[in-house]
Amino acid sequence: TSYLPKSGLCDNCGLPLNNNGVVLACGHGYHPVCYGRRCVYCENFYKKGIFENVNSFLKRVEKGTDTLTQDDLDDEINEEEEEESEETADEEIDVSATLEAAINNINYW
Figure (cartoon, rainbow, N blue to C red):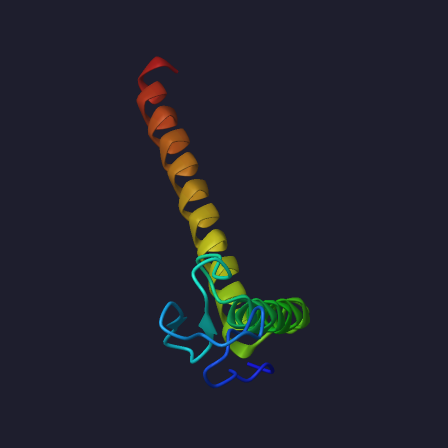
């Protein structure tokens, strides 16, 4: 953090810790009445880091939305080819059904 722990002193009130203080894993020390179940300095440090990382991520995401990669282009071409082949298959089925109906109606001419 930007706030270094005070050796032997409470990082909240600045008074000596004596026997009733606790030193956290981060190195900051507090009296029981000064400790609010979290290290204020480390909490702010982590919050700031999280906000910076999220903002950096969002900038990259927003920047990347306008950039097409070769994979994107290949996927688009493949999708178009699949749609065209499906349309051709549907047309062949329609023609086959029409032909079959016409053949069946020959007997009635």
